[in-house]
Amino acid sequence: MHLARMTIGLTVRVVALGAMTFGTMTLATIVTAEAQLGPAGPPAVGVIEAVKRPVTESNEFLGRIEAPNRVSVVARVTAFLEKRSFVEGAEVKTGDMLYQLERGPFEADLESKKAQVAQLQATLVNAKLTTDRARTLLGGPAGQQSTYDAAVANQQSLEAQVQAAQAQVQLSQINLDYTEIHSPIDGKIGRTAVTEGNVVSPSSGVLTTIVSQDPMYVTFPVSVREALTLRERYAMRGGFKAVVIKVRLPDGRLYGQTGQLNFVNNTIAQNTDTISLRGTIPNPAMQGFSATEGAVRELTDGEFVTVMLEGVQPVDVLAIPRSAVLSDQQGEYVFTVGADNKAEQRRIQLGQSTSTIAAVTSGISLGDKVIVEGLQRVRPGQPVAPGPASALIQSSMKTTAEDARTQKDGGAIGPKSAGSNP
Image 1 (cartoon, helix red, strand yellow):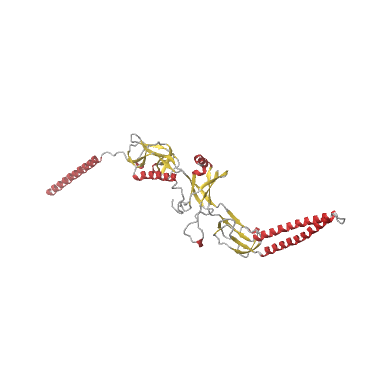
Image 2 (cartoon, rainbow, N blue to C red):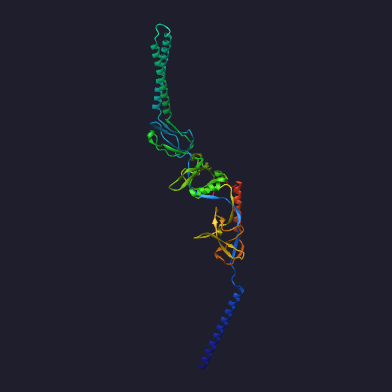
């Protein structure tokens, strides 16, 4: 028993000593690691200088495509519809036959009116002979003035009747011509409202509709406030010629043609406080479709689109990367690096910007070092370790400048291929 107690006590002392040794080693290891790491330094951030960059000014509006010419085809005479000569949904040319109406009754009426003219003309010839004889007899004892006057009056009456009959012939000819309904414009024709065998008349309503295809109108409303801004921006730089119109289709694709603004309405819509603007844009036939399918075009009358009004010439603005701009309830702001490498919060005002470049109108100056990377670790007044921004950020700024210069030279304003992505 005594020996067992001694053994247990010795074991307890050994375990306690081992625990103390392990604790001492662990504490020493932690102290050594902290000594190696040292105190935490200021966060590293990537900065870029605010510089002047050419940026293309752009405004987006919601608009619609409209056909410049629209014709509702109606019948001018009452007759049976004998033949429809067009394919619904196809494109027609000016003068193409659309409908053929029954001609027989109108041809018979025309011949009847011509016969009346011939009869009256024969009577007029006899009246002229009677007048000549009466004029000859006036020089002799058998001549009477009253006889001559009656002959002249009869001749003039017959001349008037001949003219009236000839007018009826012209009217009959016009009605006969109305039995052939031709297209008055070039455009795309819709579906027919009547089929062969039906009687049509001026009261039958619209038989079909034709809308022109190329070019098309782009109409869009602009708020009065924004219209004044656009006027101040472009009036002294060429007016309508200072901007181009680009269209984004409903599926998000950028349409491959550019248009030209050509009209501003003279009245403001009182219910919306907007003014309507309109431009013209080409709508050529797309390639790759067979002749049997007809011409296929990108723009359709009544189509809902996004209209982008862009300046022809880019302008130089104080630019920073868009990723450097932060916002809160008070507006937009950025962080800059001061002379003592402390972060400073600057409230800014943005002008015309792009998806990658923010144009700053106030709040920072040329050459200010703007923090663009590491923003999540920055606090106002906190020391930072600034360094150059990544190559990706710097290249995006250069690419934007090169694109703007290309547009200034005219390389990016020309038409793109239809269906190209933005």
